[in-house]
Image (cartoon, rainbow, N blue to C red):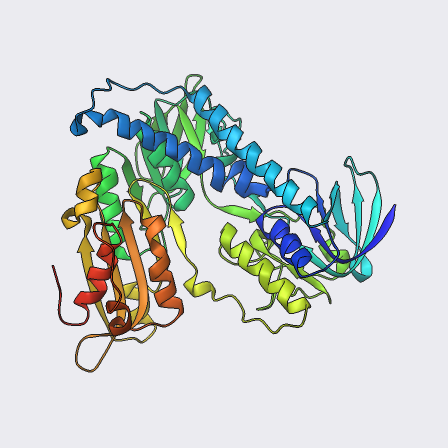
Length: 465
């Protein structure tokens, strides 16, 4: 079988299916090649299942503290089998939805492995669609990523796991070690601790959660400590041993740590195995990432790369943005490149973390003279009502000559539902809005989002509360 298309996309995850849907909406003839399942890591072993299990943990917390609201609910118990069934139902529904969207826009979907050939040809094999050769004016690489592992940590899915295996567990470990203090590791630490596991986070760097402001990290660390989650930074894990009933971790300069399960969360590597990059003349960097310019163009004419295969923030919404950028670019619409320094970040641990733009330290390093404003949720009426008062909102702004705030450079939050509150901060930073401009807007009361308004208002030199 052979066919010709305007665009062939290799990979059906967020970057791939977004490129296909957006391209088809623009009238292009698009084909998608995917051997696993449409939806990619995000839908099947990433964003969606992780947040669903974090919601299970949230419901557990709510029931456990229901007595504070006058509701006698008793002591809750966890049925991980039921939680996993609910998770899978949501994943399956979304997976079906992606397929229906592609079908509705007349995107050709082929089941198989895609391998690049010369002149933007793609060979398809090993799947239900049989062998096929596709040619296209443009090819988009969107094959995603897989979890990185550590030498000496043989993943068995029971004692030693990555995010892939943890998201399918049906029994909770009594003691768990999370290796890695980034977004993924902290979400898993939070989930397991809420559901009853004793959790230790081991991070080799001097601090957790790079990218977030120092004040946010300090607040999150205190909140984790109150929940008896141990965070150990600046530690190197050199090996492990299966003891039969658990795992013993070797930590340089410290006593071994005995746990029931280890979750390795040390990042993800680009998945380009068997893609044929060399034969197609596509350059990769030292980390295996596809080299691409500001418009996601690779070193092969007409071939683009989006999502986790390029060295940009490994976020589904960034892959969406790159997919849109690519389609606009190949249509000759002269789009603006993605501003990777100002993309939104959301971490769904408890309390949640969300941020965009400069931290106070990075703004100063960039040469800005800054002013900041920090307001805490402990004084927010809505936070008190829902019983979630740990957290803060911090706004970083360029300092005007009179000492008040000028352009808003960064918004960093930790606390209840902040992942849903970041939108107005994101818009402020990316529209290069100033403090006086944003301070004019009315915040609804009582809401969590008032805290952002209060923080901006105080940077005018006149605070309300």
